[in-house]
Length: 165
Image 1 (tube, rainbow, N blue to C red):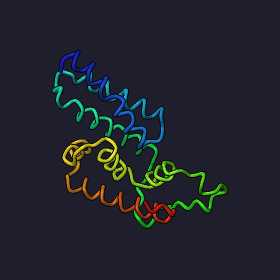
Image 2: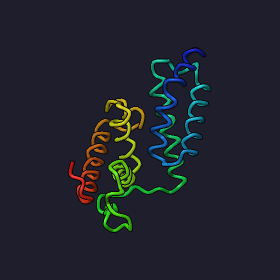
Image 3: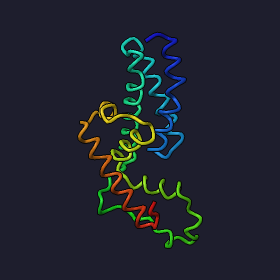
């Protein structure tokens, strides 16, 4: 990859990587650090990475760095039995104050890091299953399983919260 191609990759991809990492970590500052470290890693390997593979390479590096941060924070994945069901009536405020985005955001927080990452890459970033498998270094079947389980959990949470659309 040339310097010009690197600059183009940074311009085009940095916002997408930032959205992906920030959505998973829920921390702007940690996400900034990870994106910056990922871009530095890409720059340090500029000779080894083809321009066509820069997107996949950058997301892979960012994903692995994100996992390291999650491990340091000792975030544990939750299984279907241990999820917290969002119930607006338990809150002091009325359910009307919780708009759809907040409800979905809360539901996504209940997912394990692997499920959340697969779902975000698929539904928010538009990656194909094979690309997600490369980024996360898991099999395509595991990607499909994570997406299926994530959607099932989201459906359960949203249904219990009274959101049936």
